[in-house]
Structure formats: structure tokens, C-alpha cells
Image (cartoon, rainbow, N blue to C red; front, side, top):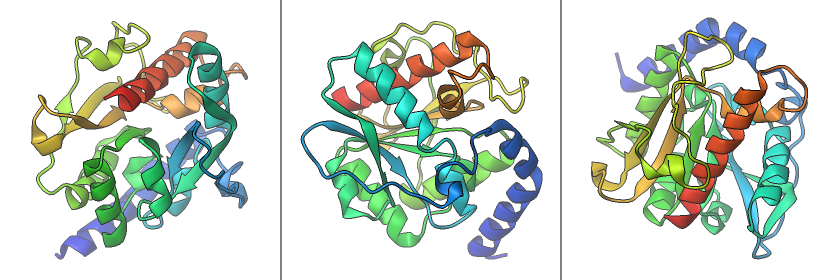
Length: 253
């Protein structure tokens, strides 16, 4: 069976196995991109602007889960917490081969279990990471989703390895001190205890981290609905802590 056919079959399996739980867990699905609207990108003005990745293959609507409410909530909190000069009322959306992505140091990719990059997008992400980009990857939770994600990352960085992070890693003490990495879980299933992984330059943990991966978790969903009472307060608070640490680590490393 060809690699392309394997990926197609995996994607079909994901749609069958994961659609019910994804729709259940993503309460805001269909509001942003799912509602047919992508906000215009704001021109560069020297301030930090949140960048979200839009993918064009696989289950294409999944990139817009939580959009744009998640980033709005996050940016309001980040504006209050930090001294970052940021655009808190706007956020930008890019495909991975969009030249505009080069103006950003940090970008967010959600639902990577449905992400299947084109050749141009894989090359675009590889070049962006090699130029100093830092990718935050969030919201997936079962083995089939990890398989599709890993296959996609192999296109971006052939031979890539994933290093599981422990609480001793500096990323968990960048702004907030996070000591219990097992408190969180994906909202679709309490049995999926959160795990965090890193991708490093040349697969060397002593070199620069290129991406941080939040697996068995959905930081974005917890932030999106933090004011609506859907989830425990500590989970929403923790989501902001993780997102803040990941972002500031990416900006400073």
C-alpha cells in the first residue's frame, strides 16, 4: 500500500472514530471558520499578533476549532499578565506556505490529528522552524490521531523524534511554575491524561526546541469556554498557564 493511500485510510478512520468525540468536546465548533468566516489578517505593526495555522488537507475544518474565541480570551489574559506589546483584539491565520508566517516567531496549530500538509506546506513549516519559528501544537488524544500527526511531522522533518517533557523542564517554569503535569486531561475523555512532548533541532535536546506538543489535552478548548462554566475552574486556569508559558518560552528561546 502506498504512503499516500495509507494516509488517506488513516484520515478516513479518524473521521469515523473521532468525529463524535471531537464535536462533543469542541463546544464552539462551527462558530469561527466552521461558520464560514476568517477575519482579515492585521498588517504587521511591531506588536505581538497571535498566529494560527490553517491546513488545507485532511479534515480541513478542524484547524478552526475554538477560533477566534480562544485567542481573544487568551490575549486579554496575556495583556493583563505580561508587559508584551500585543494586538489583543485581532489574530492572524496562515497556511504553512504563506510568506506572512515569516513575520511571526510563534504559531499555534490545533487538531493535528487531522492535519495532513501538502508538500509545499511541509516545506514551508520546515523552513520556518529552521529560521527560528516555534510551533505550539494542541488538542488531540487518541492513538490514530497521534499516528497521523507523526506521519505529517515526518514529512516536515524526516527522522523527527518526540521527547517527552517532565516537570523539571524550564518551559514549565517560564512564567508560571507548573508542577503537576498529570492534572489535565482531554475534555473528551478523563482517561486521557495529558502528556507533553518536544521536537528539537537535529533531534538534540541540548539544542533549540522547535515545537511543544500538548497531547491528551485541549488547552484551546479550556481557554475558549473559560467564562461559561463548562469546565472546572482549575482546568481553565491551568490552560492559561500552559499557553502563557509555551508562548513566552517560544518568544525568548
